[in-house]
Length: 95
Image (cartoon, rainbow, N blue to C red; front, side, top):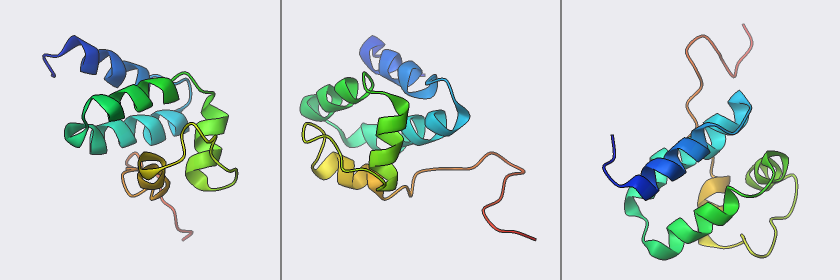
């Protein structure tokens, strides 16, 4: 567990969004990327956490243009969706 209370707070907020999908997307992004972040990136992410899950997910999935306040390299990284791990038993292909 991270010893930094600020990072722990962000981790908790990222993983407790209210839906499994949002938890996987926002929490997965935090887990995958935050170790390389500096103060500017953490500030961006903390502001992102104040947005509605439906908006964040639409931006990341590319079904809506990101709010200009969030457009840029971090949103581009989030849009890759390469950090999402599906829970065991779920599959993206049909049998």
